[in-house]
Length: 459
Image (tube, rainbow, N blue to C red; front, side):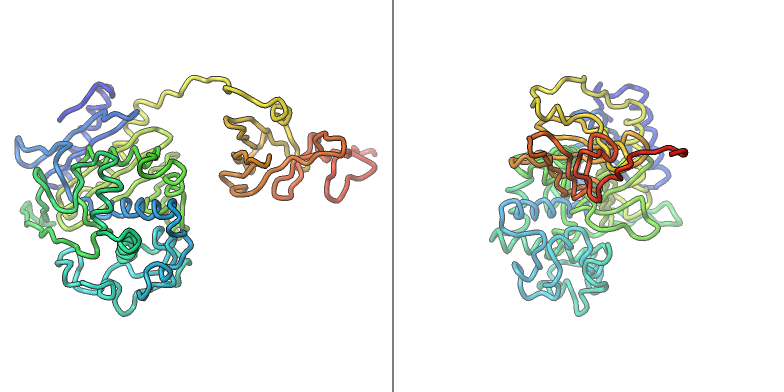
């Protein structure tokens, strides 16, 4: 085990105890984990069934469906370059498939209604060259649900996205991945094929402490859904990118878009949903983002919390056994709760507009009072001052209006409405009128204000 001084000794001890328990109770040949905090690897640890052969941050494991997040980033790059729109049907760019009606957005978020798996034989344990065409991946019945109606995880859907990348880039998925993500992020130990040092994949008998080697097949067309090998060190670099963006790969607003829910969760599973190539899990008051992965012989999980600035990777070389997703979430929770993030010092805005400052303070929607607060770059925040309500942040636009960024008012326009003399009459937010006084008689309140004004019980 190696670690730095970023985390306290008691925290590091708790992390080691958690992975040691996971390896022992999960009966996995080996397990390696690492935690990143404040941009640094604060702890890494490993356990192995072979003394003296613990894997480390340079040891490759197969990461299975974590590969999908990389494929999603490639697609988002195409969108940002104007080569496609997320609402485009697949047929527009990749004609001739049985899934041409499904949109790029639906494929990214697994809401296209496509089947979860390919037709037999089991694609994860058979060579990819037995499925040389997309028709072999999709089969005769590619859809099992109407597109856009529900989240239904689809491995073939990400094969289609990989083929879309190849079509628009004119190069192989693996080469585009290396050029556009792996090299810019310095992920030299993430590869389509294993490179030493790497773990071997094993199946552990459910009723006896014996093991069986698992095959490591080249997945062919299915590679964009689960082919990659990687390390804890490389995956923590990827996690930092997914939390902050990187102008050499994908800007911060686009990775933020990937982190937003793209489809409703399944009924009864309100703690989890899916973005654009990212799983979104609610654990207590904490939102975890990332992806899990599995292929015969391997399990993998990457979770990160933007609010806590903590990322965790756990890799194992067993087909089943340790609950990798839970282990990774536990490691993140240990760090976040034992050593809460220290907030940045308060600082005043670098500059402000006197006219905008005059809008700050209380506003009334009917009788509900909300507070308007100034943010950086002429942004504003609007939130109820009593009880629950529709809070939102707004981004300034060149035309003097603001656009909602979240919540009920996401995408809606807020504008200042002035009287003939130039004074502020009210704020208009998606047609709702906000005045400085509740039902201000001097403002243009739709429906007017009763001439008798406010009254008590005796009036």
